[in-house]
Length: 452
Image (tube, rainbow, N blue to C red; front, side):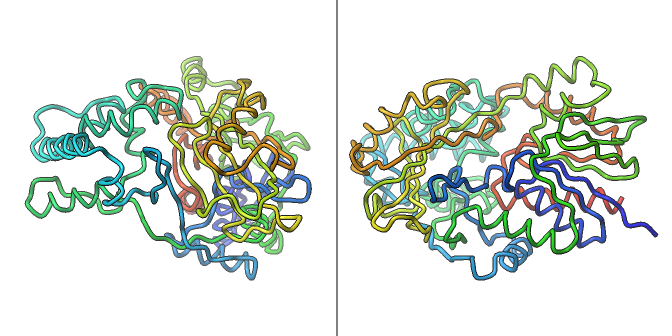
């Protein structure tokens, strides 16, 4: 009997791990990736002999099955790295996620009393609700943390980061994206003991201590090793294969045209991890007008990384630091996680900025302000910069704008007619998983397709 065939669109970590699952289930695998290397948002980018990541992408060990697969594939290239992350807040550096003493030290006494009182009242409201939950992120944050803490900590940073006020974001944004504050969790635990707070899913708490997994060449090692393992096991992996058309007939995907060739197998199953709006636009025949309109309404927040080679041994103590009042929102120093940097006596910085395609941060015109803010933070001076490069991610973060749920439902309801198709991952499902969760999504989608 002929083995089932799974064609995967997109070679990020979600698609790569889906391919691992498909092989384990006895399927033949074809994977098409538009770039010249695998990894997607977790890919490495080599510039002038050094590796740069597109942000912070280190493997967790939360999912033991995924970790075991990745550990075996990476072999001796894997490095164990204790998490050490900071946030610059109120002019001082604190641990991230914030700890209880950080909250006490970082908020002026009168403001702290207001914040704790607001949090207490918000917890009472959650325990004995008097009104239905709000529909926007502002309402959701106030319901979760209280008005004073929202105004003091969340409102301005969320607005600056996303370029959208929390009133214009869906409440779903808070549930899927907003990080939890471990310091607040301590207070909530106290309230729970006296039955003054609604019991919570304990997975929501922010983690203070973790072991991450990295390599001497950065994030590029994990997708490269997974891809090499797939090829050894018989998978057919193609790069430089951007998807141009996806043909369907009578409720089935029947073929895919890539930049290189036409992949036709009416009996194959198809798993897409490419951005959902782009996938909709590539369907032939075209979807109904309301589906195309819904796809146009779904937007992603782009990101530009300023990848710097710095003539310093070290710029910061942490693996990465969040900043609330700078043009960048996070700066990482991968050398602190074991990255090999050349030449000796140098380090690299990953300076992350959310942006819009074509604006000053995307084009590089914001570089003088980047340098000024780095100097103001004491990380490096302009004279220390040996070289810099821009790395773009057009589809970095799905934007959960108010009303996106209906547009997403319109699309998923339409795609449900295709019995041999699943769309998954951050971009393919318009979701916001972390790296290991995206890999699990790919695995489950592949299993569902092949076992039906």
